[in-house]
Amino acid sequence: MGLYIGLDIGTTSTKAFVYDEKGEIRGGSQAAYPLLVPEAGRAEQRPDDLVEAVVDAIRGAVQDAKAKADDISAVGISAAMHSLMAVNDRGEPLTPVITWADNRSIGQVHALREGREAGRLYRATGTPVHPMSPLTKLLWLGNNQPELFKRAAKFVSFKEYLLHRLFGRYVVDVSIASATGMLDLNTLDWNESALHLTGVDPRRLGEIVPIDERLTGMDGGFAERMGLRRDTPWIVGASDGALANVGVGALARGETAVTIGTSGAVRTFADSPRTDGEARTFCYAFEPDRWLVGGPTNNGGIALRWYLEKFVIGEGESGDIKEQEALDRIVQMADSVPPGSEGLLFLPYLSGERAPYWNADARGTYFGATLHHGRAHFGRATMEGVLFAVRTVADALTGISGDSRSLLASGGFAKSEIWTQMLADLSGTQVVVPDTYEASAFGAAAVAMRADGAISKLEDLKDGIRILRTHEPDARRFKTYERYYSLFKQVYELLEPAFPAVAELQRGTGVNHEEESGGKK
Image (cartoon, rainbow, N blue to C red; front, side):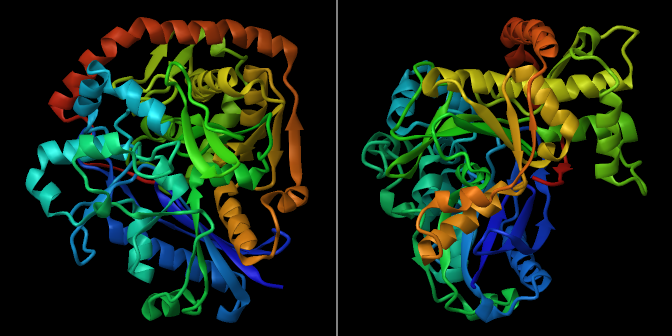
């Protein structure tokens, strides 16, 4: 029986797990790196930090599984979307990895929206115009670093950079390519309007390949360091979002995945491209009969971690306190407070927002605070705010794909019974928690198994996914949450006109200067 590695390259860490053909984990490892935020709006990574993390994670997973090089049948890759970097003709980085969280192209976004180009691009590519998009990042680079823009031989995602380092090829799977804002939904080739707008010749972009594209002949030095054979096949795989759906078994109509890690997302598969009349959701290619429809929220677990670091432990005061233990204590405290946090609301837009508002200027806000509210109230309001934001995405998705029978939970939040029950109560929908917390890695391994012939279709592994628990919504709590959810949306609408002014003030003062954000995806 062969073993398969699922590699998940995330925002703040890379994880690798070794699976057998039944989908059982035989070993795993993780390597972390910082998200660099040297000034307001910037969010970057050092490319070679990520390369080394991939090497360390795979080597650690192979060792943890007590596997030999010959035991590994294939490696499947999951990667975060929307990254961009420029490289020269020798493949050397000219820029850091500019991540999805980088907001410096906000000016280009406003210009596209004012000129009505944004709507046309969204309908053509399925990607809302937002600073996360590599398309807007390219416009920013061309405007602000024209000499570098001209000198760049290629503009690639980190995944493409990694595969070039390992195999000497710049290839981009259709899933990651679709999230650039430059892939045409109809032709599955680079969109002519996007190319013309950015001034980028398609030869300066990667070669678009299907998700089961196979690469062999890895650089010998890297193979040795990872504990793999040079001819171990690497299956290019897809985005972390699409593969998270695969990993939790959300493959059919009416099955919706909710992932909350550092950020969050709500996603479902459709059998054809589907865009939203209000451009609230994305539509990304995956394979011919599957298109990923949904929306991401910027502020998931990072909001609770922010609350922990700023207001509970205190910056630089963590000492011997383990972060996860401290987070668990916050959740337990929050459970002592009734739904709605006794009138305290939190808009969790600490780093702007993507779906459904696509507003990079949105900011975080506690609303309704009184002398009565204490630490437990603020903790619960923070958790509820994240879930209210998730529900705004789910509601937009319902208008396109219909109601969901259930929400399949993954990511760090799924480890908390309190938080997942809160999602059921707040959404009024059954929440199912599979045992695949690391859903993107498992999805990557599943694609590798199918490409290698170990399974015939992705559904073959679905029956093997164990359900840890199921949460039914409490009718009384749902009724309470309906009132707060209505108020949550009203507060956003009232504050929306003021967000640009405060965002501009923050950019002028350099808020977040020299900050580094780390942690788990």
